[in-house]
Length: 68
Image (tube, rainbow, N blue to C red; front, top):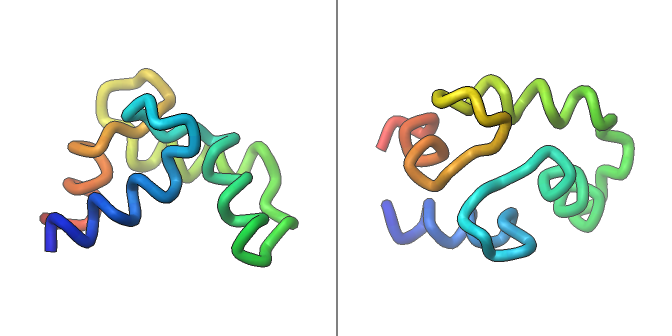
């Protein structure tokens, strides 16, 4: 399951820096067919998963949010 989580994480980590940002999330969601996600909604989601307060999501934070 961790390999599947890594694949999903990597899809959203557009610049490959190991951190998901709200803008990366918005970009991928728009590519997947939902261009209506606002910057505020995207940041709210990132902030919900972010456990260290940097307003980004690392793979460890992503995995933890999935209960893995």
